[in-house]
Length: 130
Image 1: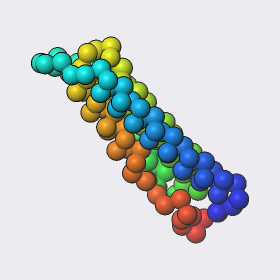
Image 2 (image 1 turned 90 degrees about the vertical axis):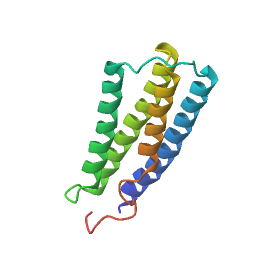
Image 3 (image 1 turned 135 degrees about the horizontal axis):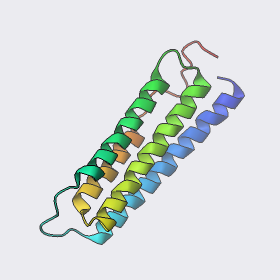
Image 4 (image 1 turned 120 degrees about the horizontal axis):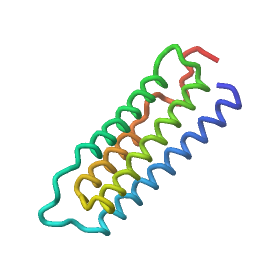
């Protein structure tokens, strides 16, 4: 890795921790709201948006891990995947507070954490590319 890519790699690690911190805060906000009994049924449009965000995270992560992508571009793609995972968590807060469905919002935020926590590719491996 070049010094610039190494710097981007460190920034990506910091961004991952920041996104995870944001998502934990999202979970806290949802838990503060509490849970109604019974919960309203999930709105299909909101669920569709959450699924599209999740798919966006998966696709960006897959592109970042593909063998034809140079290290610098892979780091930017992984950063984009983290941003989309953060958006999924924030969307979970929106669903919980605006739509009144805390359980679905909690699940969306947990999905954001799962996508943010799983690495798509080791940062140190350039796979022979520069």
